[in-house]
Length: 113
Ligand code: 5GP
Ligand code: ZN
Image 1 (cartoon, rainbow, N blue to C red):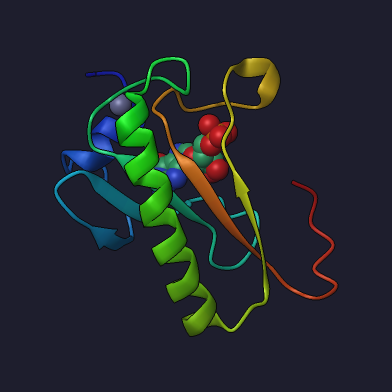
Image 2: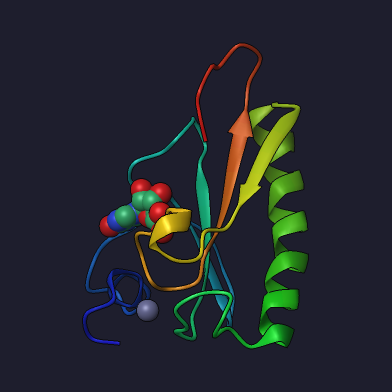
């Protein structure tokens, strides 16, 4: 998708802070983090959102999310996390390339998701 910002990140046209990568997925730091350590997991295959993504791919993405979340917890030392995934404008989706948010939560951080 030529006009998709996450496809541009995935093909290297836009730089990103990559924390994990394999054949199917890339995990990056959010450019405008809701909280310290906010990570996005992107499938390399473009689909707009939950209404388009291959269900098997979504399953593998969530399996990967459990592993990345535990590694983030170990490294950053937090005890709480929001896992978020928005679909459609009204639901808060701003980038139409499926992605999962991993947002660490800290005592008294007072952020609103
Ligand atoms: P959505 O609102 O679609 O669920 O989430 C899109 C996310 O992408 C937002 O949290 C936003 O901060 C992040 N984002 C937007 N543009 C960029 C970018 O160029 N690089 C990175 N790393 N994150 C971005
Ligand atoms: Zn895309």
